[in-house]
Image 1 (cartoon, rainbow, N blue to C red):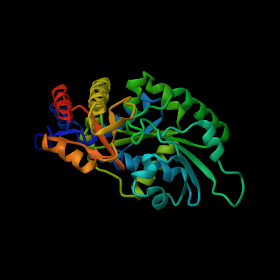
Image 2: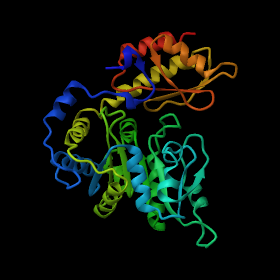
Image 3: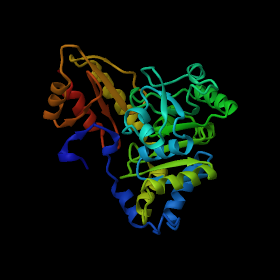
Image 4: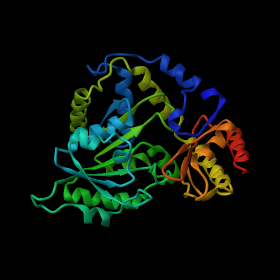
Amino acid sequence: MRLKNNIDLRSDTVTKPSIQMKAYMMDAELGDDVFEDDPTVKKFEEKTAQMFGKEAGLFCSSGTMTNQIALMVYLKPGDEVICSREAHIYNYEGGGIARNSGASVRLINRSSGIIYLEEIIDNINPNDIHYPVTSLVSLENTINRGGGVCYPIKEIERISNYCKIKNIPLHLDGARLFNALVKTGVKANHIGPLFDSISLCFSKGLGTPVGSVLIGSKDFIQKARRVRKVIGGGMRQVGMLAAAGIYALENNIERLSIDHYHSELLANALSNCSWIEKVMNVETNIVVGHLKENYQIEEFLDKLKNDGILAIPFGKGRVRMVTHLDVSKEDVEKVISSLKF
């Protein structure tokens, strides 16, 4: 279940579908999804949307695609989106905001990746022809570059209420939203209506082989479906992949708390490693450590790799470890032992 018997902490995207998930996939009823004839895809989209109190959903191959489709629906060339300097849509989607939407970005610089209402208000452009039109606010939950930190629900509510008053759409990159919901206890049908659209990834902590779902109103999803076709994202008999998502919704959400517990154990061990200066506060399944100034990240990663443990650099002098359903308690104990240097 892992690459060459290594303990793979590089990301929760490395998860493999379980035997039970694969069996569920093999029984899926199939059709042509571009013709909207795949019953399993339709069931998956409807089930996901209804969970969050939304009217409709659109199954796509990746979270980058669902995010970029949403941006392309909302933004015209020359418009502007407000987001964090740490946001995935800005850092890790290949410059898609500029390339796909022709839009500019107003960045709010805060290391946690959480942005607050007052900062959003300060960054909305005036109605002046010299400035781009502020056409979207985008949040991320959990925040990857913030070490898996969760957005306070009260802050989301404040931002949502203001955006509604100002008639500015609010999008959520919810790649690890299920982690946040499990950690905070907030219900999906509470957070869903706070956003105009949400991108949900199933190939991370929920353990499916591929796929994300974009949810929103029927009108929004119809526009999104057209954009998906334009960028070549239409898929045919993909009910087997959608079946994996249905299985994940029904079986793999609550177990995310195990990954969170494992991250706490790893964070404690990492903080006691002589090479580490500090560890970012851990809330969910991401652990980020800052190396002391005289130590090299490549050497640190090589020491772990020699023990069969894979992690990744995460910016200058930072290392990231991510727990997931293919990392057992025994694996965590081995990593803890290996970090005693």
